[in-house]
Length: 229
Image (cartoon, rainbow, N blue to C red; front, side, top):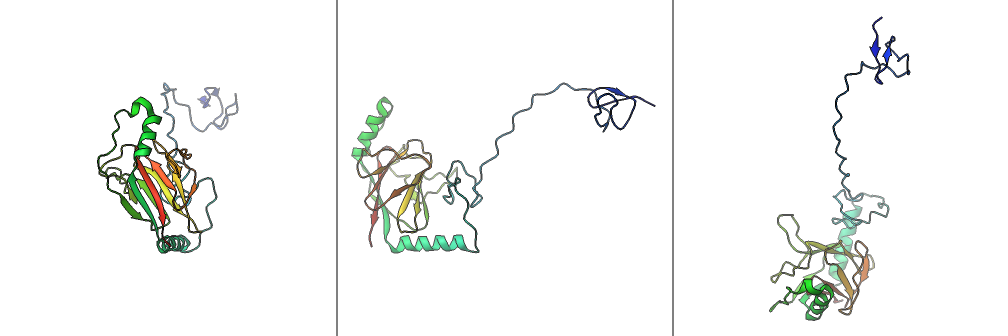
């Protein structure tokens, strides 16, 4: 009988199991080749369990689903019906967002950022803009054709506020007719409140917001929610 070599390198007179270590003799071991360094596997991309879109943080940027919560049981057309209901409700209730350049907020940002903000300049002219809030989810940011980003509340300007991220925050319509805002882990953060000294809200955490509340972001941008019954 011809001796063979088991996968662990033992010489064996049997061809089914190694008679030294008992390892199955599936095939003669080939000469060992120098082992090459194996690159670590790239982490699997995060996917929203609710809508299937790519997800970068806790909250989905497409549907707003909180990944820490279970996905609601699906019923035929339920998502479309909910979006239509919330969209119609927000339209009927007359919500709008007024965007303006706020010098008081600009001074707070300059003081907070210190020497790094020395190059910031308040715009000489920035017309007030108004956006009607329609739908259950409205993104806030700056348009980016290269990344395919088209925010519902587009703060691209002119003038351009350099402190606003392309996908900065999102407004989520609530069943009671109100809103929540979520900062999408923006570079410079989002402040919510009634004064320029309001604290920055935590990233990826829904914060209730209502009529008269102001969203402050970027170097000088203030967004005020207006409700006209």
